[in-house]
Amino acid sequence: MASPCLLFALVFFFIPLLWSVVLMFSDWNLISPDRRWVGVQNVLEALQSRRVHQAFFSSFRFIANIIPLGIAVSHVIVTLPTILVFVAFSRHFNQGVQLVLK
Image 1: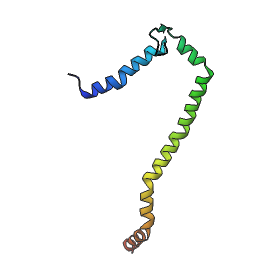
Image 2 (image 1 turned 120 degrees about the vertical axis):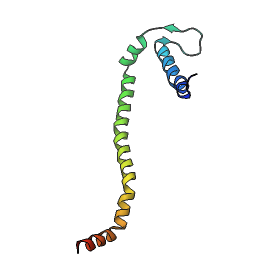
Image 3 (image 1 turned 90 degrees about the vertical axis):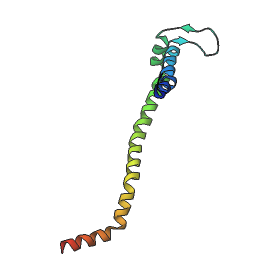
Image 4 (image 1 turned 120 degrees about the horizontal axis):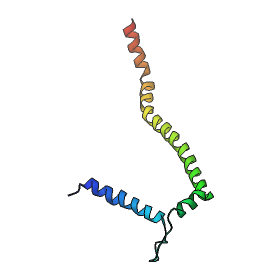
């Protein structure tokens, strides 16, 4: 018997992946019963399409902006409590250091 993780991967990853590959190489509107196998013609048309190039470039710009912003914001969220605690208790830290140095 297959494990639940394998069944989950099969149902939600492998079957949709294979189905998308079948759809990529066929000319079908998903409604009519007849479909035509076109091979790599769809892929070649997509790679030559200006709209696809614009979509790839827009996605790249979005990712190039969001990833550094997300890293910076998460870094601030993680370090802010530590900085606030240090600022709030810095007087007491200095007093402890002064006592040790005397």
